[in-house]
Length: 79
Image 1 (cartoon, rainbow, N blue to C red):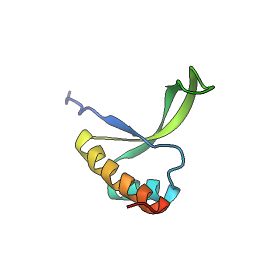
Image 2: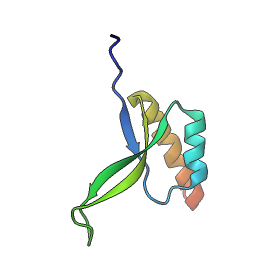
Image 3: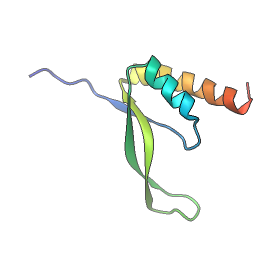
């Protein structure tokens, strides 16, 4: 049996435009998944929420993260 390569998740912050999510999926070899995360801030202490994430190889996600950050900053008008 072939050894599987380890996959990582890059959480997508709430509010990221769908166009940016779609662009990352089209450009990189990643899957869009949902992931349960326990939130511990404000009045959500201990609440579990499902957040979107990109799943893929670490090196690919590092590049995707750079592009995603640039797209979000461009979207909100910051350089």
